[in-house]
Amino acid sequence: MFYPLFIELRGKAVLVVGGGQVAERKVDSLLQCQALVTVVAPNLTSHLKQLAAAGSIRSVLRKFEESDLENALLVISATDDTETQERVAALARAHGILINTVDEPRLCDFIVPAVIRHGDVITAISTSGKSPALAAALRARVETVVTKDAARAANLLGAIRSEVHSRFADPARRKVVFERIVESGILDWITDYDDAGAMQKIYSIIQGLE
Image 1 (cartoon, one colour):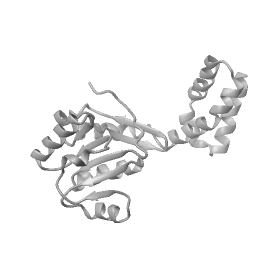
Image 2 (cartoon, helix red, strand yellow):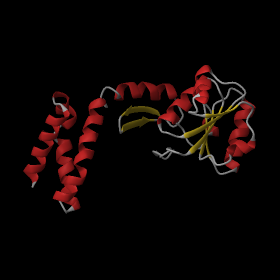
Image 3 (cartoon, rainbow, N blue to C red):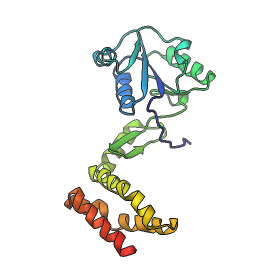
Image 4 (cartoon, rainbow, N blue to C red):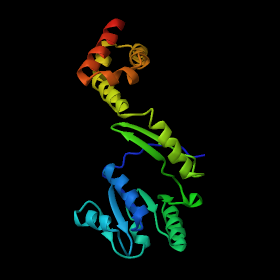
C-alpha cells in the first residue's frame, strides 16, 4: 500500500541515474517542479546535453558512485543495467534516501503516477506499480473531466480565499461558502464565462450567504 503524497521539490536536490530517453522524461518532469537535478551517466541524450549546457541540470559523465548520493532528497534510477539498478537502490536505502527504480517496483520506495496537470490542479493516478499502461489509460479517461477549466476554477477560488476568510469569521460558515460555490456547478458553467464574469457569479453566491 503506497501513501499518496505531493512533495515540494523547488530547490531540492534530486539525483537521476541514467542518461537515456526514460531518464530524459524524468528530468523534464522534475524541472517543471524546479528541482535541482543532477544526472549521472556515461552518456546523455542530445536533449539532456542541451539542458546541461544551458545550466538547467548538473551532469556527471561517468558511472554511478556512492558519493553521488550526497545531499540528495530523492533518487530516480533509470538505467538498463540490472546490476546498476540493484546497487543504486541498495545504497540509496542504506543512506536513508527514497529511491524510485524505473520498471522495478521491488526496488522502489516511491512510484511516480500518471499525472494530469492543469495549472495548480494536479490529478495523479496509480496502479501501485502493477500496470503503468492501465494508469495511462485511466489518465486519458479522467482527462476528459479534469480540464483546463478546473485550473481556472482553482485560481478564482484561490483569489477570493482571503476575502471569504475576512467576511466569514466562523470556519464552519466559510466551509459552507466554498462548498456552495463548488456545488453551483462551477466546473460546468465556468466554460461559458470569462474570468471576470465567472468572478461576478461567484460573488453573487457569496453575497447570497451573508
